[in-house]
Image (cartoon, rainbow, N blue to C red; front, side, top):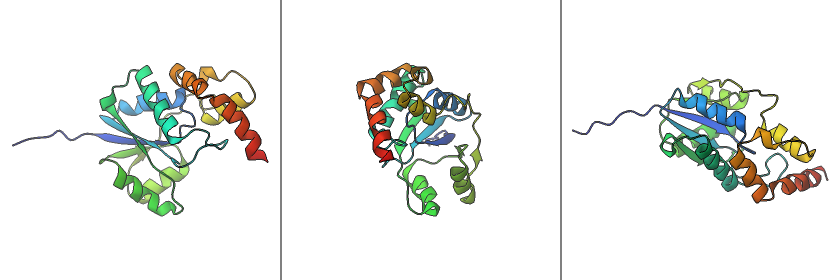
Length: 179
């Protein structure tokens, strides 16, 4: 008889616009509690706006590069894109149908927490790592204001953003979004 070990799996939902050092710290924290992590790229259908400048594919690339940079084994995580739905009540069902079985969700987002808790799924807060400094909103603001933004990101993500001309994209999108 084949006996398989039950995998203790967690879920981490984010937009990763872009992935920053705070996200990396959260992933390290979660992986101390679970065997495997499903990283959900939320709002996967959005790109090319100031709030969501990067495509889903670009965000997945950033996550993979950062995981390599911080020495997280590929076997420890899955990356799954999940779009937003007009009906929030259906979104959790979509998530559950698109990923392997999991034991809990890690989130500090009030809406994400509420939706999963209403579905009777455990949600655990993640300790925030210097939140006033490490946020995607702060990264985009610094890029726009031409301030030091590199220090907020893993080096691989910084290089990727430079390679895809992400700085110019963010600057153009801010002007476009304000029209």
